[in-house]
Length: 311
Image (tube, rainbow, N blue to C red; front, top):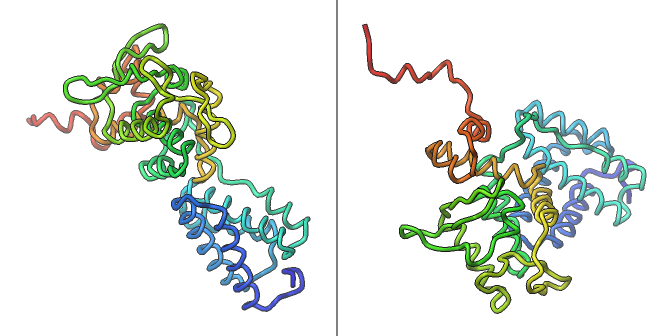
């Protein structure tokens, strides 16, 4: 049976649910599993309403246009498109669609972010999804989650993260912090850490017990098979790879520096003080920090509306 010869509706539904089950077997991370399952369920429901029309690149483009018209955000659209392409790739592997249709569907592009010159930010929900994406049943997953937790929770640059040692992690005024970190232009700063960031670091360090020592690099390279290479630290490019790997899993297109921006914007939206953000990020001017958090003049709810004065 193929989709090219007008199969019965019940055959399509039953067969593709089998394909979905086959596809999801390969995803042990529960967040990825749930996200792909929901995405494919939504697509199957829409496809059914179209009368189970033939699988094609045009079909997926029509679904993308439908999602845009429904107001679905770029992140969700791209996640769904990724899941759909993987489903039809699995369908091709099982002989359900010919190669030319599979290749056509693979060429469907996601929705582009409405770019800003200062880069992108993640929503709180997407940031949480990214943090939850690594499989922490593995040592590599524990390390990758700790990397994401430091980038999202402290706003570090890639070069700063790869230079971190266990000695940098100290307590100040009753809380954990990254102390005396040397950043751009050799400036030192100390960055407070949230408890969940410290938890991620602790669980990675416990998993790599005996390989991470005081004064040595905190994030180490992994060999195939999950073995830690002692004293062989990560490169900034390796950090980019880690971020892009999990960003693709949740259907977003972001860079490590976008996580620095996300830290700034989420903290500011959560009533973090601008001058404290400036200190954490190591910016020389508050104007730079304002660009990171996306502050713009509000003409509806302006500062002058809150003075409490009148004539």
